[in-house]
Amino acid sequence: MTEDQGLIHIGVERVSENEDGGATYKFHMSDAAAEEVQQLGLKMILFCGVTKTDMQDVFDWILSRDE
View 1 (cartoon, rainbow, N blue to C red):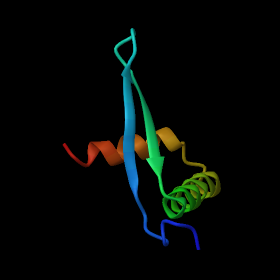
View 2: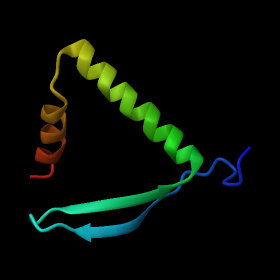
View 3: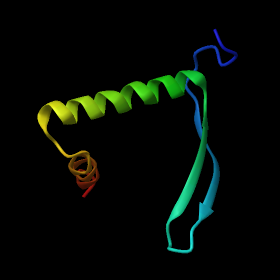
């Protein structure tokens, strides 16, 4: 097992503001977190593909739930 002992840890390492008003984020994460993020991302892609759902529609729906 790696030195992170399977713990999931994700943190923001650096935030850079861009001239266009946006920002670029650099994250650090444990190996376990990286593996989990990869699995969740692939699952999202596959589910959207099977259901012919645009991923942006899913993100928009998630954000709209906070309104």
